[in-house]
Length: 350
Length: 182
Image (cartoon, rainbow over all chains, first blue to last red; front, side, top):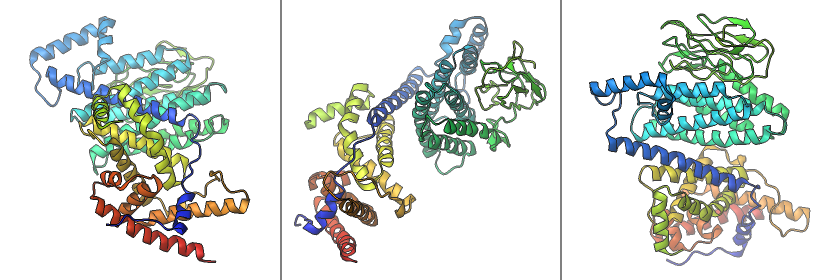
């Protein structure tokens, strides 16, 4: 067949779209960094899945675990309480591993003790990256992805976002930009998860992707704009009012959900906000870093974030302030607050 | 880059070697951006297209897939699919009338005319079938020869030429007629 040619008249039109404007400064470099970071995340997930297969590591719920292995896991759990070495080892644990709760618990503690807000933001982003990695790992290993991981990812992203939005004038734009880049990656991971799930609906997954998209829309604006930063904080707070699915599959009007078990570490913000755990969700003045055990299996987790000197009593999971998800799966939205007087530290009882 | 060099690069990329992945990104991101921008007319959407294209490439690698050669064809195919999805989802009047970017026109009216022409081309492009659009864009906007276009489209060269013939006829009907109208 003859080579198709375009006549001069049409050529004039085609020429009009030849010129490309200069790419916005830094976008190419940002894109490359994001691409390489995503590659690192995926590589880690691929390596771990392959490693698990090679070592024939047991998958709880999928494969039988011998009594010896179970006893071993229990021994490790006990020694975890006694020594930091095991905690360090647990950092590589995946959700199907026995040590995974140790990993998440130690993350909560690390978030609790870090003082500098921007360091806390970095830490929250690092943990959110871990959640993304865990999702990819679960998919690679053909294991179901627990809602708790998705909820945790969102909480950690929101914590980082809230801290970045409240950073000083000088630091906030760069901090928000950092969070934006990570949110984009996390959204990609969740989109990938959605594609893997297929048409089957997962309310939490849909909602989380929607939340991240909304945050990204705002983050595409002028990050130096104080008003925009307030909107971002509002958006984070609004998540409290969304219908939510707990890891146990219950739908709640609050993302806080109901806890199935009432024990966990409550972590108030480093700046004296939030409140400690209580048996029932009560609101109390003051705030503090809370840590303590909640009530029994029917305890209701009702952790609200208040940043105006009033702490909301979390219960069940012992959450308050910018609490991270608790060990029992009860997840609370995260907010970083400004320092207030009268904040309690210690057991977190207001 | 020779075929052999490309195969070595892609093999390393399949192993998630950072230097190989970086080389892949550096080699193709600007071209993909231009390809997307010419059709979409919006820098942010073009950036989204580039990042999503590379992200899908990584996902393919992660599943042990992805090309062992002709990466360029593979990436442009992903970008084309992304753009087609985008066109399906958004209404045609979503195409922005962009700021003037080309160096030539001296007067404001010439600039306005150029902007209108660009918009018309993009609207006409999206009215083509996805295959016609891909065949037209790669050949006449990106300047590929038809061997390469055929590889990117996974079609015989003859079929690509037929698509281009039909595409040219359709665009001529839409553009030249519109241009002549008062």
